[in-house]
Image (cartoon, rainbow, N blue to C red; front, side, top):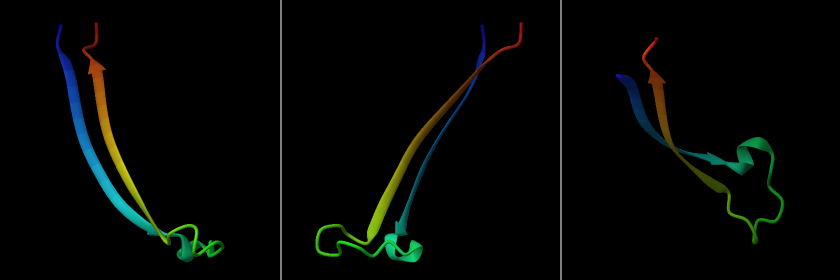
Length: 46
């Protein structure tokens, strides 16, 4: 059986202040880091 596979990482950052979320500045940071590790597997059609 043969499988098609793909894997792709993605990273990024968003700033809470860009979305108006500026409460608790001393408690929460402004920059939120995002990291995704995605894997896709598709079985061969029967």
